[in-house]
Length: 153
Length: 153
Image (cartoon, rainbow over all chains, first blue to last red; front, side):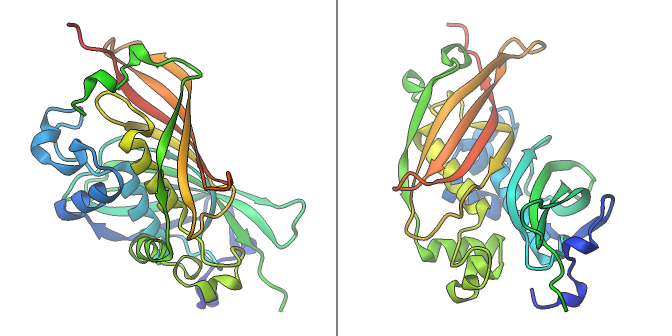
């Protein structure tokens, strides 16, 4: 958070700005470990059990996709000064995330709204698509982020 | 998923139905472990660093709250036959989740929409509030769940 030179304040953000994250390679062990801790359902834990379900094979928890997406945003996919502070988010999972996916997050600023009551901040809406190496969209997250103005010099 | 007798199909769900989960006691070690893996920002990792931020002290990642909420729903907080399969979710984090919180999820069915094209299923919208032991709302999740009809006998 200390690299202020490369991080963006509310003043620096405008609709249409785009960011691309690094990548995250997901494997079966990660899928099962997350599921065991937070989403212990057969289709997230066991490939054989998942075959007979809607998923047709082992699928990552949507919350795992969301958590990996956050990691990728924090590591540079959304270079917001002061960090990524979410007030809310709207998630869609159009296709299941799979072991073997190499995930990347492409984000776009879709709204910038200075606060009426607090002049030092605003809400920036960022739409982030999480895709795999074949361009398949695994998640769309439209997040409302609290972003501060650049402090007076 | 095999205890069909106590799990609910689309046919069994109606607007206004409510469910209450078990509880999850969150501690500082859990907060920091999740943050280190998925949301490595100072206010989720270190109490001293968090003091000078908006959070005023160590706060759990919102994605951690979301993941714990899912665990509580899977463990009985939303007894859906075939499991909890989310098509999407809308999250709000009105207050930061803290170490020491004992979380519980109260859910209410807010819409039931049979599919027009696929007669064996529908979308059920469930609004889940995640609260701590003092009733403070840490998250509101309005989720769209894919729910199947009871199979023919």
